[in-house]
Image 1 (tube, rainbow, N blue to C red):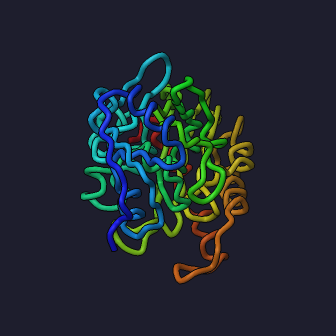
Image 2: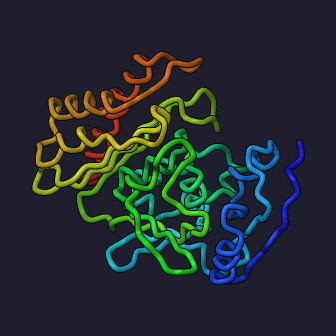
Length: 290
């Protein structure tokens, strides 16, 4: 099937792109990597009258630490995350997730911001950003606003992003000493969407958990933050009892549906097991174990 007819725009500045979105509103879609949007266009699940391609705008492909945050630009691609020494050394949950995104062809073109804006409940990056307590900067012609990742996702393929806005930057609190993370993913074959995945991020302080983030993929109508599990970890020593309690709470937070990939009970059990493993791996990395 071929896409419905549309008018193609290739702005060279952010101001021009935002002007087009302001003019066309819900009749326009932003194209970054296109690895989610193009299939929707071909199947006519999306039929925008205008396509706004932001790839000719300079300086949107960036990953940098500045002013106490890690900043990710809207054209920073999965392949760049996979190859980043900064992520490998300091942001383990992102480094773990990057090579598990789809396949090399998609990783070459797809962007983190585009994946997050697409808001597929089986998408990996939304879960990672929940675990990292990220902020999303949404920019329109009238200005910018910042939304917490936990407030950004409102349902399957639904977000706080308005038709006139671009996700212009992802901001993540800069990693401090004694920080560790992990991303564990169950898939039927390499490159598949997750059956279940869990993101874990830990900040240790004086031998106890200073802060914890746990995100769940593909076990609900949107990416899920396991808030009760996070709360159970804060201020606690990370022993086997604490880990098992947090893992059980994470499993309770899951809202899976039974399908050909597994039963509700099976998927909840995978969440529990992955949370245990993720916490142990994140703790080892926070202690300098790699």
